[in-house]
Image (cartoon, rainbow, N blue to C red):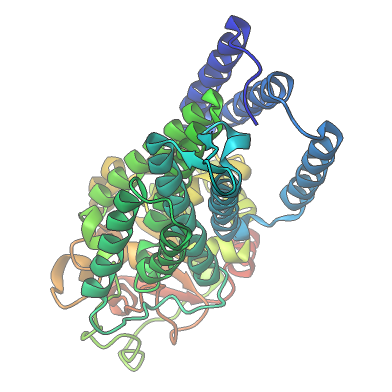
Length: 477
């Protein structure tokens, strides 16, 4: 597969696609412009795909079109049926497919390099002709397959954790750091050796070790770090696509992959800064990678106060300001729409309502923002941690709905806690904290109990989040 000829219109089309992708990323940076960003991304991808099909020699165009129709149909059905609560694992699953596609393209290019235009056919005096892959192409192949394999296996583990097939607690292997360093070092060394010797054992060993390191890197990462993991895997998938773009000689893939890879890396860095964590520390083990010595979920026998929907409605109606803190519990209960209705009711009673979003609330970057946008919560009522944290001390009611780890003061005070050092929302400083969770027996995804549950100014509302908020809305009247 190679380009028929260098055509200035081809370069212009790929440039237009690249501009669309850049504008799409800009649009996706805000819920208010996210729909426009998605449309621009779709237009850019459409331009890139059509240009590639027109300008490349393809063995069977009907087969390619059938494959596009099948894949597009599956994607359309999934997008229509998927629940918002399952978006994190869907994103992880899609990342795994990008990684697997990169591996398959790399394998095809290695097995038939002359068809990809990355090798010279050598005809010896004696024996069968053989293809010698260009040294630069060997680097591209090695890196593309390695990054793709890591993305695939790592995304599979992330999917299993997010989907509940694996526990959120980390699985710690003995000597995991030395094991990971050894495997990564072997991959880098073999890729370098691959530039000198294209023997099959080198290529397949790189592939297998890369699949293995993907599992090894993600297994020890705990639940509180999963949003960073999803962002990181997104970056990996972009770099894998860019590497394969060089192999295929496709400018659009290079541009798109570089944009996805760099934006994912930047997002991961921003999220790590928001969590007061280094990127290396997350990859090396993440939150929850050490035993919780603070008691975990064994504090349920401490005294706490239980409230009702009527109590919550009365307290919020009398308040001047209520700050709502959504978390993954809201997503599981699909309570975002009734929560917005509650906010509207409170505003009718003259209450000032704001929403506080922690950067790692939920299971993927921007999870809470997406849910609130879906429920048509006004954008000017939604605030990030650094913009609203100082207001809790002057707030009458902090209404926490299914957000545990991101409101846990142990992150500020308990050096033995696995979440120590992560900036959290200071809900405990409000005059009253209304905390919705299913039962007192459960703990957050990081496996850490929350002292807010047992404070004098906290009233626990134990129920399904959606049902409790519906009862509160009825009580507000």
